[in-house]
Length: 136
Image 1: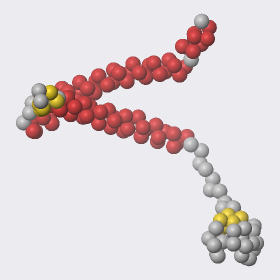
Image 2: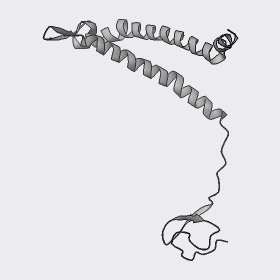
Image 3: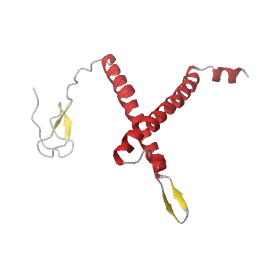
Image 4: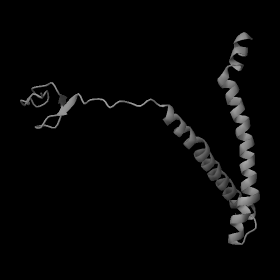
């Protein structure tokens, strides 16, 4: 039981559980937003009051294309919100705290005869054995 208790009380397990609950609640909010506000607005332009009523039938099978459109719009809105309100700000924040990387000096040069990369200190190319000028 001690191992199970340690596992449950680990920070990342609790954080993950909170994220799932908040994500489900956020998904419900976005779904309601799409279903109650965005879909009727878009559907009004097309003359249909709600996408959920759009369907077609083939061999007595009912294909609810309107529900698919509602779900697709909901997904796109969720993806946009996550990108613009989570990913971009976190990337900007991480860029502020990332230490500046000093440019490193090249340790190789290109052989003028075979275009292979060789050490700057080399006087002969390891690939084509051509004599190279010493860099000073």
